[in-house]
Length: 387
Ligand SMILES: Cc1cc2nc3c(=O)[nH]c(=O)nc-3n(C[C@H](O)[C@H](O)[C@H](O)COP(=O)(O)OP(=O)(O)OC[C@H]3O[C@@H](n4cnc5c(N)ncnc54)[C@H](O)[C@@H]3O)c2cc1C
Ligand code: SF4
Image (cartoon, rainbow, N blue to C red; front, side, top):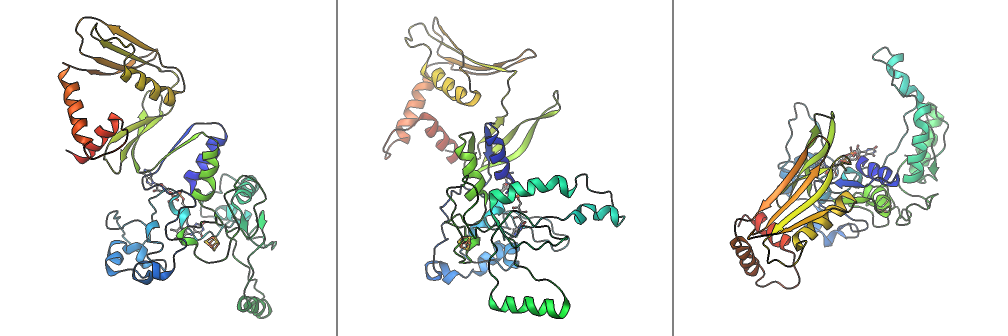
């Protein structure tokens, strides 16, 4: 949920933003079970004992069916210590829990912000309702929150779309509650579009058909989720790169600067580790390559490919220097130079034999395949196979 908002805000301010998600890719409006009838789902949409065992936290809630199973994490694979019962529902895929949240959306009231101090249990919040209110306005307007205007001090009104209707039983109950107890029953405020949005920033979103299948994902984009709302906005700016199946397992900390400089990530399919760094303006990237004197092309194809890759990453032309001399089998060096230090990553071939072995490996790998492949794909697959 919050990752999508961060991506939208940062990209709209012009920042190149990398969004990393540990689970699978989900793209609006591709929600596999959204339009399925019970007979199209396993076991008439009832979960099995095996699933109950694996997803035991999820199974304790009222939610589990095969139609929404894909949005909940396997609790046996992802255990946590529960000293007292605690339903920690996790959602490892693009969109996170915004895919299956219940969409209830309420403002804190001024009295919530002051309650700590008034009751003498803690200090007051460092921000007031008045300071937060414009942000509630912004979020409600973009997300599309439906609700009734009630003027209740404990539950401030917001920038609402029209409310859903109460049904006849609820209308009767509301009246009885008011007549007999003087209490007020109101319709829930939720992130379902009861009318078109009041802005044009989400052309992919339509209005709610009141079909009560939101937990499967909504192909109409009628409820707010990161997948249906914030991520498409971020994507449209052209400033977002979204990568799925990337588990962030370490924040890389720069001791000298006293701040994070990047993240260390494992690919959940291949186990491959990659470090992603924020743009480091004080380091100037460069490439050097050296080969034997008979090699005609300069720079080498490898250096040019590396240059393209780095240009995309660092958004600047990357200088490449080439040396052709003697019998050098092949050296490529990627460097980052700063006032303080220089970081170098060098590959030096000892002989031409390694290149020939690589070509044979690729020839073997390509048997039975069709199309054009990059050597990187060959290596990635061989490494992930462990073969
Ligand atoms: C069934 C249910 C109903 C709910 N109903 C409501 C409601 O009606 N109203 C309300 O206000 N709130 C509701 N909530 C709560 C709300 O959904 C969450 O508070 C909100 O989604 C949390 O947002 P988040 O961004 O912190 O986490 P998430 O939405 O869970 O996003 C976290 C993301 O980070 C990813 N991630 C985690 N670890 C890593 C890692 N190491 N590397 C890379 N990626 C990682 C996850 O896969 C996930 O995509 C509900 C929650 C549930 C489970
Ligand atoms: S149309 Fe409305 S009720 Fe149906 S899934 Fe979408 S948001 Fe939920």
